[in-house]
Image 1: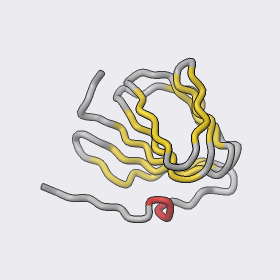
Image 2: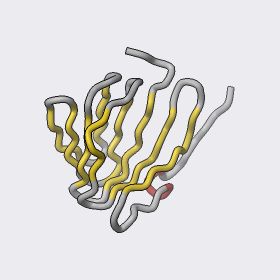
Image 3: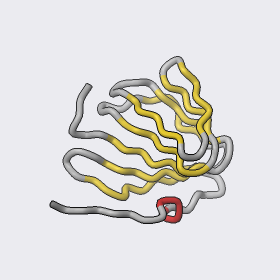
Image 4: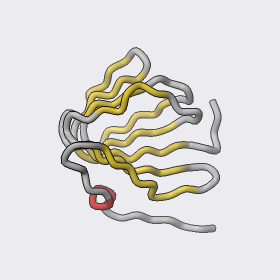
Length: 107
């Protein structure tokens, strides 16, 4: 078995002054872990994913739209999204988010 550990997730990514950055920190046949850094005011427009996913807000505040529901996200909040759920994110402050794509699972 292969183990992977990443310490201090927030320190693994530098939030740009005006933009969005992403960095894959782990990937195997069943899961992909991606860190995102959003400058305040940046937005990921509505899209879907082919697999279920979990968004974990590590730092900052964001407005997340999940289908018809709007969630005001704060640090240490996470959201499970089923496959093909339309979703978007708007950063209210600088945000660091961990996205877990559950590749081994189809809903």
